[in-house]
Amino acid sequence: MYKSTDKICDLMSHEEDAIQIISRFGLEMGVGEQTIAQVCEAHGVHTPTFLAVVNYKVFKQRALPADIDIPTLQRYLHNAHTYFLDFRLPRLRRSLIEAIIPADPDSKIPGLILRCYDEFVAEIRTHIEHENAGRFEEHAHDDRRITDKLTEIKNLIIKYYPTQPTSTEGTVTYTLISVMSDLWHTEQDFADHCDIEDEILRPAMTKHHALKAKTESRKPETGELSEREKDVLIQVVRGLSNKEIADVLCISMHTVITHRTHIARKLNIHSTAGLTIYAIVNKLIDLNSME
Image (cartoon, rainbow, N blue to C red; front, side, top):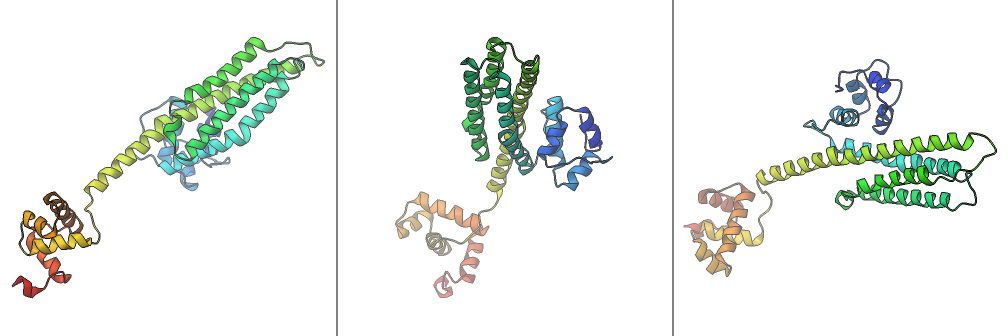
């Protein structure tokens, strides 16, 4: 497992995916002998989040640190989106055309393989658009189907690639080998990308929302009293029971109880004496009426 005190140059030298990872976090080359923590801090990258992605990609480590920084992880995923849509997928399409079209210009098979690839790209684009909009649940079950599309393209080429003599011996073969390698790496890269969403981002967001909801439920309700709450407060201070307040204000007793709960939370005052002082100070009641 990589730690914050490890040299980032060792990570970049020993792990195949490291260069891709650091670029998506906005880090750069020329790191010298600095540690992972030093480089991350210098670029404003949350170190535990960086390590969570690195150790997941390299070791499939699913034990997440307690302090994943969601904005940092979202920036990483957004940069991955840009890489896929603006660079990797268009380049792979050009390479695919170069490899399969010259094999047999009159065959319909290369065009059908290319159509299958374009359908795959369209699905990835939709996936990324939903993710950018925060609509993760809309494609939660589609990740495997999208990567299966690339497996299908590889199998179509393996089984049905139209072999024909070429004018330059070996040219098409070498290009095709390169394309097959790119297809495999793209499939792995996108599968890892989806796993990082599922195994790191989603749990971190679920934990964040649960903690936020828990904190808000404990936080006293504050704010100005509504006019109806002031009416109820006045009757409480005058010594009326809940039933009597309900009769005076022509509301149900349940509504009276609800208003009293809100008043206590907003003012953080739970005693009648305390409510009386509040009503006097805020001129909700006349002292003469109290006498």
